[in-house]
Length: 209
Image 1 (cartoon, rainbow, N blue to C red):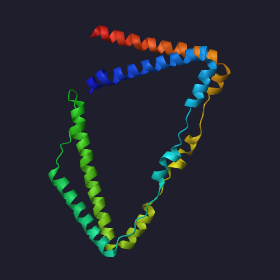
Image 2 (cartoon, rainbow, N blue to C red):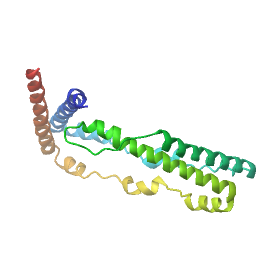
Image 3 (cartoon, rainbow, N blue to C red):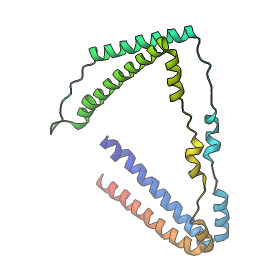
Image 4 (cartoon, rainbow, N blue to C red):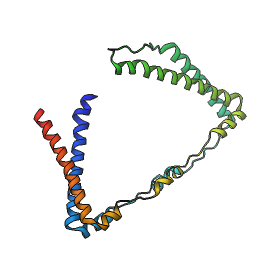
């Protein structure tokens, strides 16, 4: 994992920041030398993509007809049997030794072999037990199952959660439009410093190779 971060992720991040610095430098120079044309280009490039419009197909609610009593009984029996079989097999076959972490032991191996497998084991046990309970409700207590379903069925609408993010904020645009040359100079200098810093990192890395 360390080799992947050092050889792939960090060089990709450095190159990405370098390209961003060069692009910012060009934008700043364009604001200084051709302010009107650059501002028109920035206005054309500003596009507002609404999350509500993008998520509207996912907001369609689909209702399923309830199963017939006979099918519900068979589903309940299958859930009871499958859940009970899962619990028995996991408890009987999946033995994970739970050991305390000791200094000098590979932490990643300990997490995978101990904590992760223990968590997976008990998630399967709890899930199988829950499936058995749901199957029993479907088979023997359909009215309670219907009440449980009515209580658990909740509709969460993403537009309500994203309503606050649907307002477009552009606090820097008026300042740039009011003083394009000054803003362009600041953007060019700051971006050039970032690009130079990334070039220094790249050349230092090449010298060490």
